[in-house]
Image 1 (cartoon, rainbow, N blue to C red):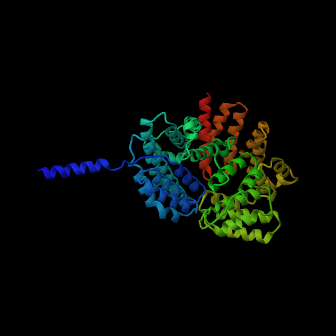
Image 2: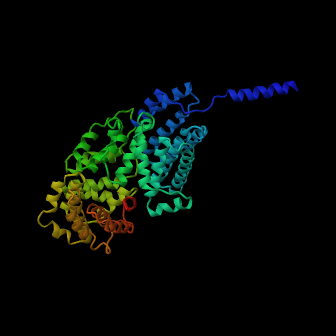
Image 3: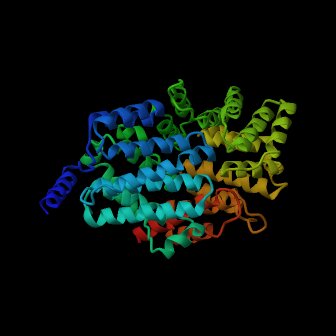
Length: 492
């Protein structure tokens, strides 16, 4: 009997001596996190393996491995890249969930990885799996909120989820309604903003940069507001292509195309850094905005080096425009033909296909690109060229685009009355042909009426925007319209 008692004592004491899985900050983890953000994934994984041998029970190790796997699956823009790591990614989430419910990081880290998983599923076309992963993230954040409601890390995560759910287009809202997920852009943005500025996040080397990225992305996408650049939060945007891309989008939204070009010129390439070919596409577009002759070099580089299927139609479409601007007729037609013979695998490709089907005057395209780059004076001069209006009035789509672009230039100059007139002309025949210019004119009429203080009219056109469908990117316009409606409710 004593023998069995000794065995029992040995087993229970051995179990109690087993180290507890914990989330413990360490300076080396901050260094590894920066390696991941800088896309030095091989070096980061080696460092994590060394750190894990010394600290086998630190759950920040699998968490950072999960972040590294996300970039490994995201940067190549290939379904196979995600398939290669999908099982390992799920296994890492399982490890994280072994953490104690007394530790806020168990909820924060698992929810972040579930959100990353949802994004990858969505990116590669699996909407059901994306919804399921999003639901898992929602559950973890709810658990964290119940136990750590005042913690800034938890508040930021919940703010991000509230904002995302609150702005979802109607075709994505069915699942969230079924499981009782409710969102609010206004409340979510408020939570994210206050949490991000808290001392505990500003001094947190593992979360500050990614949280700042997500905050800036949401403001850029939903509010069209880039007044706070990513770098203003202390993020090193010059060493990370991922962060550099975000800040270049912000600069472009502010009409600072030349600054965006200067930023991208600082991008470092080496064999230690995971390639991100899409940045070549972005550089080509920035140069094309100002009709720089070097734009073609970057699109060709992207087409040669990207192994993914996305954005190829868009790249050839831009090459078509570039060669047309320079009177290289044969090269322009060859690029157009190549684009038409490719499948549209992304929203940008679908929009490119729509552009390929249009017969726009070359100066209308030129003005569009100049506007994209923030060269408003030059864009306005092109739009006022003799004969351009008459050319555009020959087709509905060209007419819509002509007045829409004039309205956008006037709006950005805060000339709301002129903008209202142009957008009103742009939507006059939208019932006959709905397209991006028509729908965005509805949205910008809402913005314009808001600027003029006519809130009832603003609400009317936000609502009308939600009825505009059947063209590339309409989901994004619906997100902005829902955000606008919520902003109006907040002010009333």
